[in-house]
Image (cartoon, rainbow, N blue to C red; front, side, top):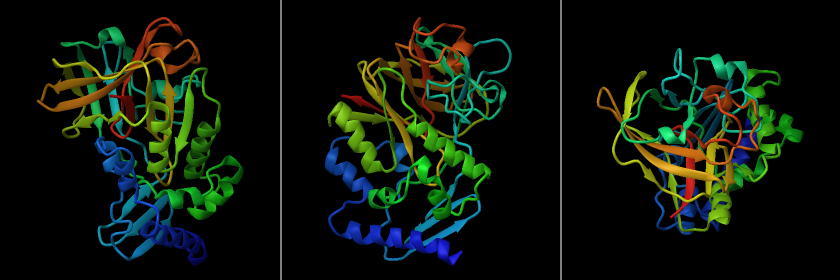
Length: 338
């Protein structure tokens, strides 16, 4: 075990030294590039502000994940195999609520056909719905959950020093003490595969392995006059009925960069930029009074999606016919131009 720990100790110590030098901590890098753009909750929750504020750095690598402790604030526990949180919704289709599974294939990667798991599994995170239903007074059954995928961002110096490639997946397993053939190994392999696959026509995709690289990609596509938004929930509740409250607001033109958090030992976001996307702020009120500031992303051109994608099976529509929307899970973000 000590031999496996040595490379990670070296990487983290290097990051501490580098950050005291020329490089900025991730959150300060954000502020240097986007001084007037607040960091959304989805990002704030997975930052480690004490990477360089304290001197001590310790790393424990164990079965199922990585625990990184930097300084006195307790560190972050990362479960590679943990299922993410999100939102499950029913807008009146027959039977039980239609929900979407996190894996094994992401519902936000539109080259994939729906899997049986996505159609029937009870561990779900998102719903596809039609844009025409996005208006005041719409009632829907929803279950907003907090995310158990607590993987935090590594500083860019550390992330860039760790292989992120299917060709070097064995090196990844070694660094994080992952057993080949295990559930954790399959999750890592799947994330790498999704990041390396070619996107659909008209989509520019990129997997950001650090906050700095997410900032660089998104601003290179949209410029620096941007807003970055995420869904915000007062507190987690069980499945209940929500009503779309007054105040639905379109908050972008047709161009956006949407970044979906992946299951990985540290924070990795699958980001894709399209020019056929509308973004909305959607206030929801639950029957028990819980309020949700939801973010909905609507895709106006689905002609290049897999005809067997989950959205078409759920909504009973064909590719390219109508705009299709989904709420963002709480740990995903969307970048839009102001």
